[in-house]
Length: 488
Image (cartoon, rainbow, N blue to C red; front, side, top):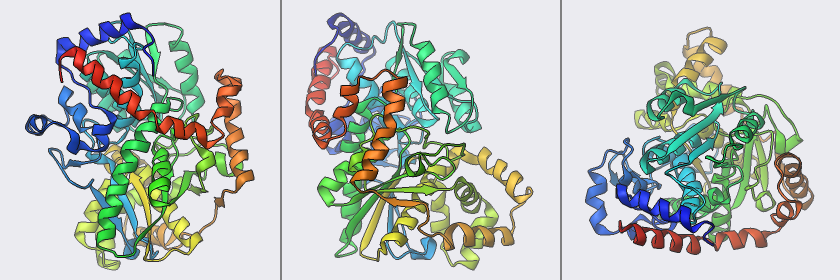
């Protein structure tokens, strides 16, 4: 990892030094016990929802509520009483991340910091542009605020009202929120807007779909966190094995954790997408409402040739479960008719739309592979239901006539949980992996101008092993940068 522009880097050093901002390494975010002891009390005294520099040291999975730090990342274990499958579904909770209540702030930090420490981003003169379908741009704006630079959010106009309200409170100017046509599956329109913004050299596009640091951060940070969670669960369930890691693809950052888990635990990796836009499964296209998982193209950073399954989940299911899990009537019905504890039903608020999508994909895979009680499925809840109250109201009006009663709750349970099967699921052999990999050519080589040789290099696992091995070099650059700012 080389310094690209020493003058830009010097300005970045001066900018952060003047603000007293220190940068955590990826190694520290993967293992927060490595953080200096004197930081602990100062971090605990910092508002986790404010644009404070010390919140950079909270960009990890080990946050305890909104204040302290836990030894094991917060997680849920869903069992047969809810899922209908014997295999336990283990879910790491992204809502514990600071400022945005979603794990995408990790991707945002990881995408900006390599540019910052190698002289490829000048926080004094340049704007950070964050193309996203919601949470990544919120994370990017939060990181930008902390670093004292302008952040621009680019996202589809059809995303949840909660996302836009948050952005309005955090951006410097209303023009720093760029609304593109469409909704979750309209990623091409985001790219077009960024191409226009990118003509101005003062705008730096931090494209999560092609920034390999996004993959690297989830490989190192999310992968290790899930390993810690699995080890903790396995201590209470002797003989438990990690059968699979299941993740909706989105920008394909989070699914990078599957590479780590495959190496460490021997798990397979399942990539998940919306049935209404089955790009990997059927070379398909379309619109859907599972906010946060993107589609209609294969991200450049997706190591698809190391994936083992593709699973599609319908947005009808995630929309309906959002109502069942987060309405008073739905929770009462689950407790009364299904015997679920109040503690369990309350915990379902930790599952946003893409999180429920991941859970449903786990259920489908468990049925497909005939997994039992000794086979754990690992996944993540990227955010909680707090971002989707407005979407719940839309679903309530559209699908339930404005009211949700016991009959509706029973119907949702039957159709979207009890009757889940393994349809729209594909086991990936060598030929299928090659087919899906090749889909990326049209986006990245023909449309975005990636060199064919660079595109092809990603086909083999040697490329990804080298990427995984680059974390040490990045952390050394961060440490050297901190030393020059005098902040650590």
